[in-house]
Amino acid sequence: MSAGHVVIVGAGQGGLQAAMSLRQAGHEGPITLIGAEKGLPYQRPPLSKAFLKTGEADKLALRPASYFEKKVITFRPGSRVDAIDRQARVVRIGDGEIPYDHLILATGTRNVVPPLPGIDRALGLRTLEDARALRQALERPRRVAVIGGGFIGLEFAAVARALGHQVTVAEAAPRLMARAVSPEMSRRFEALHRSMGTGLHLDAPVAEVTDAGVVLGDGHMIAADLVLLAAGVRPNDALAVAAGLPVANGIVVDECLCTPDPRIYALGDCAAFPDPVSGLAIRLESVQAATDHARTIARSISSGQPCRFDAVPWFWSDQADCKLQIAGLATPEDEEMPAGEKAVLRFRNDRLTAVETLNDAKIHMAARRLLASDHVPTRDILAAKDYDLSAF
Ligand SMILES: Cc1cc2nc3c(=O)[nH]c(=O)nc-3n(C[C@H](O)[C@H](O)[C@H](O)COP(=O)(O)OP(=O)(O)OC[C@H]3O[C@@H](n4cnc5c(N)ncnc54)[C@H](O)[C@@H]3O)c2cc1C
Image (tube, rainbow, N blue to C red):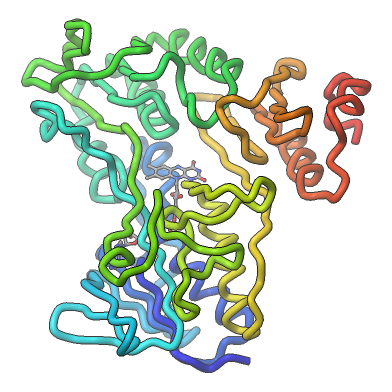
């Protein structure tokens, strides 16, 4: 069993999981978890969903304060790591420094802020503080404009609409959630949001935010007194860059989530890792990736043996009464094959890459099992069963 000091930078979903998994795996040495945000580590997914309605912040905490004492984990909230000195093997916080034997970078992402006139009038949705500000803004009747028709923008739009606000979404791409789902699923969610009375502008890049609302590239004006900016995120990789570690849309790690410095790992939203299926470098923004990365790193550190990351990705999004679940990983170019009302299968070169389901947890779980197995059925075999995954 390992006994060195593990320092984790970032106390979000993945950072906390790394600390927990290290103790579960029997790591006996000290663990220090450092988070820039104040308060206990919390879950972000409810911030664009239930929290906007209920405001119940207590329910978001991933572990109570007593957990850290019980597991002998030094938790330092409200502390930002300013630099990593790889020679001295220390991280710097203000004037102080903390030595490490192993360092885990779990710094997450920050919102992309496009350089548009008036963009600072828009609010973001990344932290509990952001969600509190939005919730407060939604206490009065509003005309809401959402910049970005991805998961977070659409989840927020669905809640705001359900609360009775007038909502309009502007999306620069020709379809909703284009990076992550099939054209068929985009159409279904477009229909859902339109049926709720939400205005949708597709192929509609925003040119400016003013006191009166949002101006689109073609001059169209969306009148709004609350604007949410949900136009994507960038990995927090500045510490890695300054420390001379390679970054390319995230902190570059190998199949064991280790940087070229064998003492430094990266996980979750900030890590660019090789997709176990294609070998291509990818970065995933999901609870599953952050937690499964953390478990893999904890196994490597505690056993002293490098462990490969090979989990099947999965993701979910709740919009109104629709739960979208995605198992596997498709690119926007992958072919789509609708299978009944509730599922869409994705293929690349006739190989099943992902399965999207709507309100069907059973098929989602079947897809995860199938994609994780050594014998993923070919397209022919799936076609012979009418693409019904429950038949496998
Ligand atoms: C509104 C919202 C809704 C979401 N919904 C879903 C969903 O439905 N399903 C899903 O799978 N995923 C969802 N996600 C994504 C999911 O929350 C993230 O993928 C996950 O939190 C990533 O975990 P992480 O540990 O990599 O980063 P984070 O949880 O973002 O944590 C990173 C932490 O590092 C801290 N940090 C950064 N730099 C420093 C530094 N120098 N020093 C100290 N601390 C630092 C940050 O302050 C932050 O607290 C959602 C995200 C948001 C914002």
